[in-house]
Length: 267
View 1 (cartoon, rainbow, N blue to C red):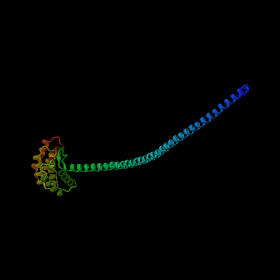
View 2: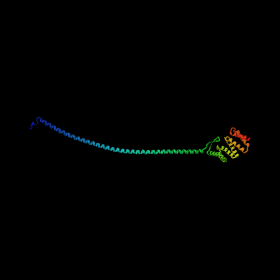
View 3: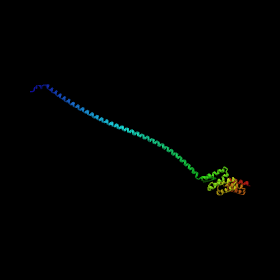
View 4: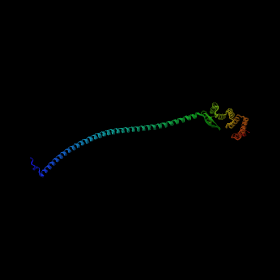
């Protein structure tokens, strides 16, 4: 039989409570130890995950950095190429501008030469084309050659080369039969012949002028020259008649005054 005295009294209760408390403490300690291990494992696992993520991010950043470096390098190369192209274009533009300026100078020079050539051609054409002239109050068109020949003969006459100028005027009259200079050439030929005392030939040319151009401004002078030739030929009767004709036909002219003076001396 169990000794019941051992379970009696307060000491038994105390021991029982102490035992229960001990067991509870031991269980709690074991539970705490289990929880710490799991926590450590969770922390380690979390750290590994974080480290893995970090490494992945670092790898991605490194890869992106490499790509960025390559892209920057390529961009710098592209910029350098673009700069080179721009410089090349600038050089081309400068060269083309220089060529354009040279072309402008060449064009201006060519235009100047063309203008000079055109002016020279125009001048030559003017020398070949008829021009309007006025001689002894008569206006007409004259070819350059006939004008040149007439003026050359007249210049010779003014020098007093009366013998030399006669064939010049004769040739002119024959060569330019329809020339506006013809009647003036007849007048000056008659004067050159009068100066060389070829009075008969002089009268012939003066009268040719009178018959071909009775309205010519030199007609009164031609009549007076005819009278002078007649006087030189001792044909006083014909001279009087010619002088009277001058006075009647051209009473207000200077030639009429000269004719009156000649008549007075004849008396």
